[in-house]
Length: 145
Image 1 (cartoon, rainbow, N blue to C red):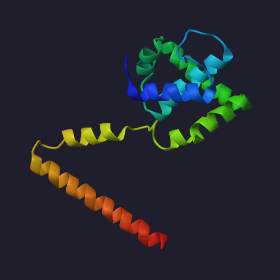
Image 2 (spheres, rainbow, N blue to C red):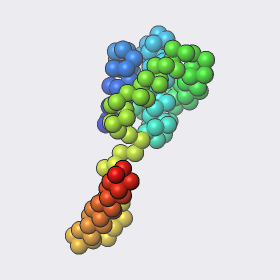
Image 3 (spheres, rainbow, N blue to C red):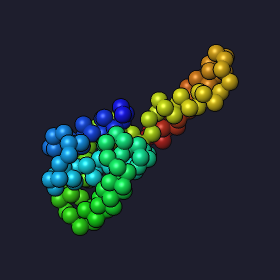
């Protein structure tokens, strides 16, 4: 099942951990830890359901549940794992929103779908959004001066 967010997350975890082919059936500690990071980020930060993660990974949902609980133990007791996780979270690609919890385009699409379809309504919405963004920008400029 294709999911662009999970594809990007998979790539980022593989890059950060040095694990190749994250979803390969492999029981090495490195693979298991990396998958646990993947599952946790997808569940907590991307808001994916356990069943969605399981389908993407071609695993049973109980495996995801176990992996999430394993993540908590690893984070609590394994210094190397904790540092690796914190490095991953602090990574500039993660911070820049490539792995954003809420895909902004999906949210905007949901908002637009709630508006009765007419070009006039959409134009009014964009005008209001522009006005709000301008006001926020003006406030930030006056505060920083």
